[in-house]
Image (cartoon, rainbow, N blue to C red; front, top):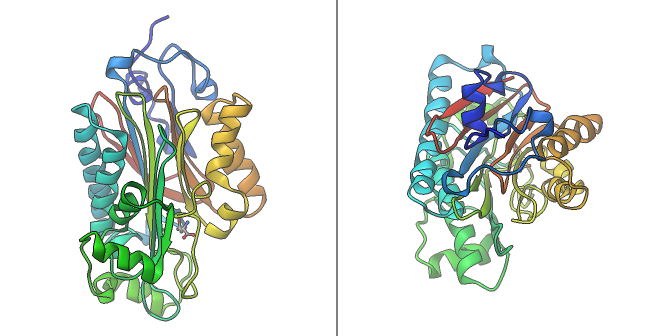
Length: 341
Ligand code: ASP
């Protein structure tokens, strides 16, 4: 059976970039189309890695996104993919690739994570982030931090340098200080664009950034970072830093990062649910993602989307909203970025 290195390569070769419809899935060529994407034998180990990122799902209307915003968002996603690709292409770890990609998005004012975090109802910013290692099931997360420039770096330190999985608020910041993590005043996160949205009391700011990766060692990782939902109550924590809800990775199944209405994603343990379908029902990744996002979440009126990748490098980007900022890159280095449905 003839086969290509990754879903991206296969789709490009087949001339069908599927991101334009309601999301996309990737499958090695010769393993048939997206619907069968979880079932084929994997491509050769040597050339196998994959990185998928999202910059949030929500009410993204083309008419409401200025050309300036659109090119900044595309540039941010492209740079995140490029940085993660550099790690993976030199044989680096998926954990380092997702960290590198998320840091780029956190430093950009155009995404609801790090610098561009939304406002709480009190006019402040509280950030959440999580990271998970699919090889060991090690995980680290932080919630409600107000002065950490890159929450994903702190989440990683919680995973690697503490015996805990989740640290919140003041305790998380004390740990950040002890670890020498870069701190900033809370107003660092107050961008003009978010202030206008806050003052207009618009609740549906598309948000959150995420990355999932498979590295050439066969290891999966997932990471998610967010400012949460706009106008949230101080103290509110969403799905992003909750392992299994907004973020999950296991080499036994897949890696998932979610975006959307966090309360619904917590109640439905969305990221773990997708991985469990793959592990226990032996469902194809694409089918598991479609069932959860398009059928179950949509039926419950839960807005959002996910990105996912499995240990064979098959990937899925799916959402039930008007758009999801998203992109992917595989061993061919071809970066694909899409914003709308
Ligand atoms: N899921 C995030 C949260 O509920 C928000 C988002 O993805 O827009 O905190």
